[in-house]
Image 1 (cartoon, rainbow, N blue to C red):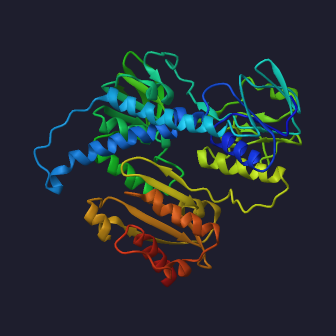
Image 2: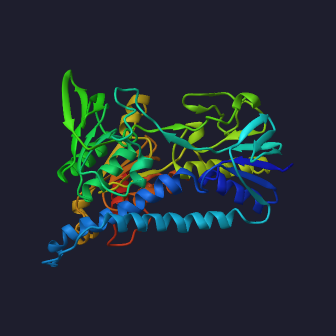
Image 3: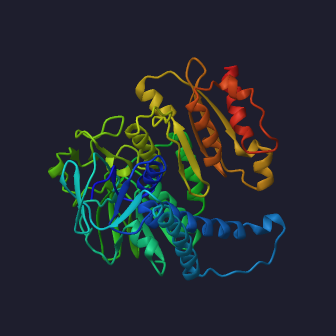
Length: 448
């Protein structure tokens, strides 16, 4: 079958690229070996956020007395929470399947493998196109440690999301996004949670000032953290790790490996197409083009920014390039959120990154405890931190606290338009809202 564009993978990058290409007159074959929607919909963003909502409601119930609601009794049915999570995923998956049934799109079920630079085999057929987008995503990463192959004890995020029963005690290895989100969810669900992390601080993409405060807030909720700790072995209901030269062991019923994800390139037969790749993914230029003309790689598989929305925007950028369009998508401005409790978010440079790069910056902070809406909500734990360069242009924003992702999204949009702190300070913000903290930071920077 000859077509204009082949897309391998139907995650957020693949299905949005297919829809955009078909809407603009291209004939698209999109190949998927499993469920449409990719990791994000089926084993990542969406199911974890469904559980995060369950956890949030439980946390609100636990604090209900502060709002004058006494003598409340409830029980938690994990099976029903899992059923709800599956229902959310199923509804969204049906939506993606409908999108991929649109005119101009052919959904192919099967394992894709390159035959040559312009031919892909899947489902027993050959598909040929001048342009091919690889959007196969990623798989959970595992550490090469003793006992890692003990399937009864060592779980990935995939298995945790598919679980029908909760372990009583969980040791999470890794304090990145996956580890921190699960730590909060499982803690709210009543599990005893321990987190072991090799680095000095959690969530390295976050400004360390914000990350430390977030970790301390989660620690107060009952999650135990062991930072600067290297896991050595798992087995017999224990995790053993080295912490600053001292061997420590914790008991657990389950070990959740949350040390990141690795690009999914196995089985693609990239060698047949001559596509260069390595342990960190398929190598691309800033236009997402591989070393082979006409072959692109987007999303987790190129290892650039492992975020669902990054995959989406990369896919749209590639399709626009194929169509010969000049678009205004800025992939250098990529906001990110961590749906812990409280949640956190960031965009642009952190103060740590500025110091490492030798970039002069000014910073400003606003605390939730001084914000009227936060006090009224009972959400006083949190902080917004904004950065500007010497000219006053906003270059970063990092925050933790209720709805911090929404606050950072506002700043992200303004960074895309090279907005200065003075310009933001002059923009009227509704009172009372949490977003007044964004304006407050801008006012501080404008006065500096």
